[in-house]
Length: 462
Ligand SMILES: Nc1nc2c(ncn2[C@@H]2O[C@H](COP(=O)(O)OP(=O)(O)OP(=O)(O)O)[C@@H](O)[C@H]2O)c(=O)[nH]1
Ligand SMILES: [Mg+2]
Image (cartoon, rainbow, N blue to C red):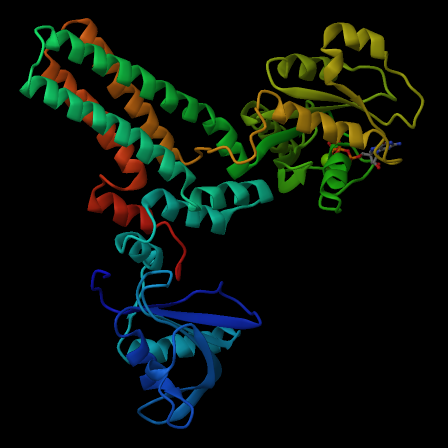
């Protein structure tokens, strides 16, 4: 049985014009309130079977004036998103009609939902746990297929299951420790118990560390691999952005200094989500606007996960190229030898001595040569070191990552405590802390305040 809350309503579709707009109502009185404003002869929604859809009108019951022609979906608890009765009114998609319908519903007994309140109820009513609720938000915000896949896996409860198992492990150990202390069968019980604690702490710590190793990958899947296209003016950076996007997003001209500001676009290259950043060509310049652009390019360079350094092979290497080669030395980078359709002026062998030959790709963007190889190299870089497990459990959420780090600290305290001969009951406290911290990920041990804050980040109507 769900916890009893008041009945809430909100617009669940994005603002703006669309084919339909949806007003969602959830709570004990959802059907009653809907019946106050729904008209089709004498039909009552409350009498209809669950999970059915009904044609009719929404009217203002005081004046009986029609508000909109609608389709109404009714879903009775418990098999609903919130585990409460849910009514979804499909209205015509304009801003005015959706708002009018919502207003009518609010005037007839529902309260306007806070952002994320539907999902919060799903959590509070036990349908999903906290990491799943956070996954809902990730699904909504997912920018690439991979990110979406990851969020959906988390929504399935993969991460939760793993965390729950770890917690159960810890709990079993703590229980065993209690038994040992209360009913010492052997004389060396103190030593045995310490051994038990340290083994378990090390074992679970290893698992948490393994999980944390997926974090950077997870973050990339979620936010895209920040990939900066860098080079001096006119080498073909914006052209490269456009071909990777398969769309003319950035302005391309033969005038050096065309791009003045950083342009960011999401694109999936062979399944790798990239946050592609086209930058202003880096050079000394007196032009104020261009200079600001160049500053931003430098910043993009320093923050990028991957650099695509573009060189123009139809001109000899310039001091600017040399500087950029140096500046990107420590980064993951690919060096793109562009304009291979023109006469070659740049000695590839010279360059090969200075940089990893594997990182060089020769392209001609105008004749579309070498682009496949470039895409393949990007994917290779990304998947290197990744075991390729398709449904691996990733952590990507900053809150989860922070909690996992704290958990490791708690385990370190357990290990150190035992090694320095601390009494077992004190070590137990640290072990319990690790158990609590893991519980915060799934929401099993979490404070109300945090829940309120987490859900308030959601979109309205979700
Ligand atoms: N021949 C040839 N021309 C190219 C190639 N790639 C780009 N170009 C041309 O080079 C010129 C500059 O291209 P952009 O993409 O604007 O260069 P950019 O690096 O973004 O330049 P800035 O924004 O000024 O820094 C344009 O005229 C492109 O058509 C190529 O592979 N071969
Ligand atoms: Mg450009």
